[in-house]
Length: 352
Ligand SMILES: *Cc1c(COP(=O)(O)O)cnc(C)c1O
Image 1: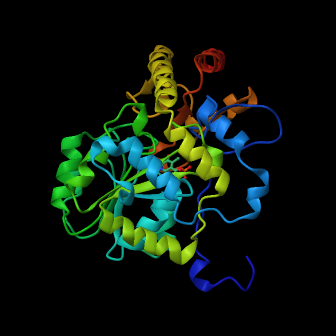
Image 2: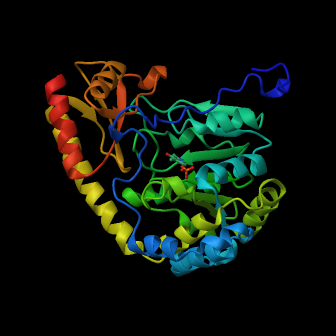
């Protein structure tokens, strides 16, 4: 650290992303990327993209993406002004924390690590609420209506979900604060809260193109909510980074929204391999709850989480281990192709 860094940032603990190694080829089951490439529409859109146009700034209103989102989710009664496209959903979360959490923010202790990082960055009063012994969120802990709430649904890294009735109760018990539902993994089996936007003035739903839509490297996400909330987010976005989504990423995102069936089919394949993987893990003596994400969260009775991650790494497979006390016996394993999962299970059998 230099002596020049502003004092308010000296105690930040930045987010530690999963490894993107360069030293050799690994089977990457550590960052919940899709094992499948983006769809043919995306490929066509990028190859049509005019090279010379890169000298120009792209549309700072992200109008094409907003229109494509309205088209995709129009059946839910959501128009273009219900969407704020962002550079990954991490940017959507950042804008929400900045916009809506001055009275504080609440989230579970076992959840997406970025919530704590953003809370510290924006100097928010964070109430970090322990999940139950079985790692489930206890909604009775979220009834005080005294601050913004953020929940990942399905939760990461546990893969556990809340149903529509539970999301509704959260929204109606906290009418004076925004409830952010982070749906990074919703396409792998949960029920989206997007249809509730027309009913609740305090709901923001964040989604990403990084997981189910195979575009992690393009950095595309969005926040969705009532138009008044979206105007607030746009006000901040335009005060910070009006050209937030690159021209090429806008094209890729719009194209992906035109081919939902391609991604839905990939999700069905991943869900099928996930169910197979959970059965095989249990057969090997692992404890793993049913997951609704593109990953499973599993604990072996025979080997610690960190040791297992290291043993797999030596054999060319990366999984994600979190050192936090409550979950350090676990590993989060991304679901890849069926062949990749068979390789994982074979390797685990050898290690054990
Ligand atoms: C991956 C992830 C995100 C954000 O990913 P982006 O690539 O920034 O869109 C947000 N929330 C959760 C829970 C995630 O796992």
